[in-house]
Length: 242
Ligand code: SF4
Ligand code: FES
Image 1 (cartoon, rainbow, N blue to C red):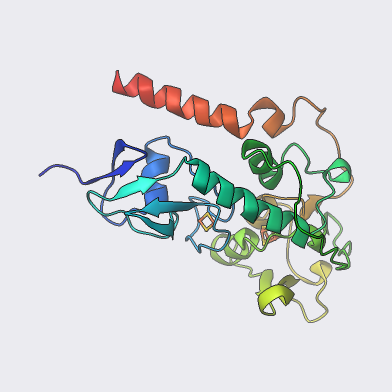
Image 2 (tube, rainbow, N blue to C red):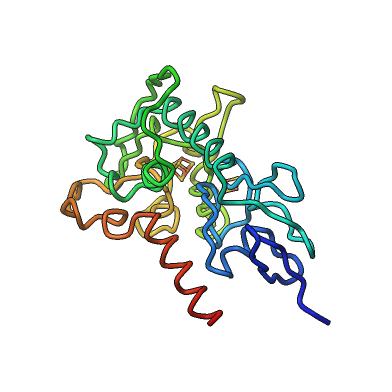
């Protein structure tokens, strides 16, 4: 029996049973924009950056199982326009002052904004005023940059076995909290060696006393902006097909 496949932007992409559209795309070296997805964690579908059109309907690629013959649109002006709006909403909801952020150049939110040519925040800024947590000896938390992707929540709970982080509240009041009676990171068993310390795609979980160590031009997305990753993936795919 032939392996089932989806048609992703007109290209047949095989998948195995149980894979999502995102899994199939990643396995075929095709980039679908995403923020809350990480191949090592269970998908949760919150950022909506991976929105694609599957058989004409808007869906999250990271949660929708692939089905044989499904026609999926990913890289289109319509979808990228919607993704740009989602990025603008994330930028105004937090305080993303990139020029003073240690994560600048290593930040996935910023890199996607460059990739999708987001030129302005467009909406009014919310200017949240959540106190930073500098209680931990190794790590600083700046909650004003949190995009609620829950990667740290999932990493701490599922890989580190510690459940240091949670989301609390609803709607616009939803925010990241530290699971300690005091609410302080210092009162948990969190450590810089934890997986959760290294998964934040933005500048919330930062190592103390080591800021701005990588020169501009050598930071992660300076060296390989997302556009270049997309080109590299396409080139690899073309090589494999020839
Ligand atoms: S702290 Fe970082 S990893 Fe955790 S939910 Fe916020 S943005 Fe995501
Ligand atoms: S990556 Fe799919 S919803 Fe965030």
